[in-house]
Amino acid sequence: MSTRESPLPRAVAVLAYDGVRLLDVTAPLEVFSTAATLGARYAVTLLSPDGGPVTTSAGTRLLTDPVGEQVERVHTLIVPGSPGLPREVPALLLDAVLTLHSASWRTASVCTGAFALAEAGLLRGRRGTTHWRHAATLTRRHPDIEVDDDAIFVRDGRIYTSAGVSAGLDLALALVEADEGPDLAREVARDLVVFLQRPGGQSQFSVAARTPAPRHSALTALLRSIAADPAADHSLPELARRAGLSARHLTRLFNEEVGDTPGAYVESMRLEAAQTLLDAGATVTKAAHLSGLGSDETLRRVFLRHLGVTPSAYRARFRTTDPSGSGRGSPTGSQW
Image (tube, rainbow, N blue to C red):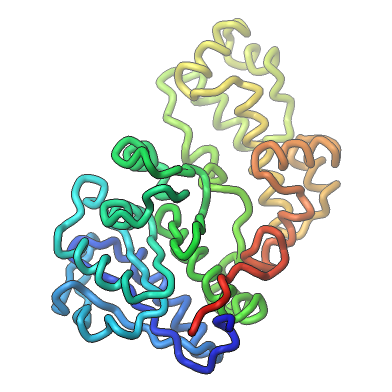
């Protein structure tokens, strides 16, 4: 039977260890615990390899239960990440992952927790993801894994992996939806005041935040002006005029210091502005006009190219964690 038909409680085990990233632990704990208060059948526990207190990377100490007490009744295993896992996976953690995975119905990682699953051999021949900053390292160290460096989370069989830190929220909400359906998952998202499904991938995050600080002062001023008013005239001739540079010189500076062409950078900023407008309730037409993208059709092409969704689909992001909108996502045939 499917998980949502079973009367049995589902034991969710979050595996903590010294150096674990605090939000990687607390985000899934909050989602599953909140779901339980809203009627879902979850019993949530925080485990560690030896059952003692663990100190997170933030310095916070967490009280845990030992792995051995839960090994026979694990439905969902969550393995959070830490800053140190891309360098080394501790032997005790690796043993705990293998022990709990052997008894669990599904296993998931948050952020660099994927490195623990990889070292345990659980991702061999599978698709997976991790924090964008460490995706290349995971690919290099484990060439037998198909690493998607832009996905928020990936499911391959009964193994789930998710992107950096806050993606643990997205993953946990998707697992709740798989168990309990979209209505309860939506209520959890509303309670936590988060998106039920974030469109796009890891590359969606603020253009300004992921752009290296330019060394050239004229370029710094241009980037600020584009961010301040994305809908203004930011054509290459106009940008070159404001910078006091030739179009060729400005293009070379953008490529060297921003890593993109002027036109591509302006489009990214306008896309981000359109997303913000749609989030605030603007129509597609209004978002296209105020962001500087112009027409509905241009907005649609830009959304599809960068995010893989249409503007109207983007506005519907609260409906489900399933990108298809079907609300389905759970494996069936489980005793749970």
